[in-house]
Image (cartoon, rainbow, N blue to C red; front, side, top):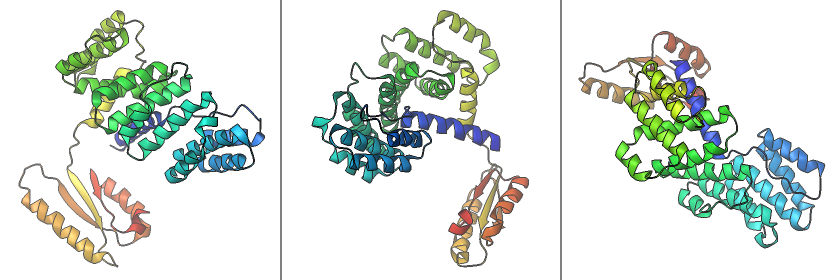
Length: 339
């Protein structure tokens, strides 16, 4: 059970990282060449975003002219990745777009859209990214479709979300990067009624048509991966140039199993019976037991209570709970025990 949850977590995490921005290196100013700029870029690559931002801000403070705004832009991008949204916004406000070189203005728009998305403003992110400039670099195109995909996902527009993922997948250059994106594409398309897909994709290109056909196959074999092998080979013969990566079917069926309802037979409840949280813990215990007695279904889970008063013994207690067959854990209540 633990391995299953870990697989689901890392698959979801990888997809989230892709949608958060596929580029891994900020655009470096072309001049002047400064060792500190290279060091800041290395900090960014190592995901030490706060340190990268500090270095870029320092560079901006002692660099005049165009490079000043470029370093502020890179600092703002680093701060967004670090979750310091207000500071990033403050730096973006200081940038004079009129003096920013043309080749960096789309990068500025991408960063502004990313900031809007992080602030739960998907409509604003999509407004900023309404058009993809013709001469954009590959990393900018990846980030463009990543942000738009994340925005549509937040707005629960599954068809637009799938379109952006398909566009993003065309740009990715490795199987490892494509696998979680393609798994998500199939997951969306197989959950969408065929008549809606036909309506929303009236004249699909060959790649999209391949995705729609593969989704149709998977709907015909929802729980029988061993039976889809022959139809999948026929599909591959029809779409020999399709970008579907090796291992996609295995990933898809694994993902579907993770989405399936989990049967819970035993619930472990960790609550303190002594200390400052004993009174609210008793109220929680009483509420849980009242709900349990009111549930007269035959498959209601067993509930076992454990004393979590000693915060230093939480991990041993969790191991004991797992050994005793718990499918779900509620608690502990105190902040110290959680930490």
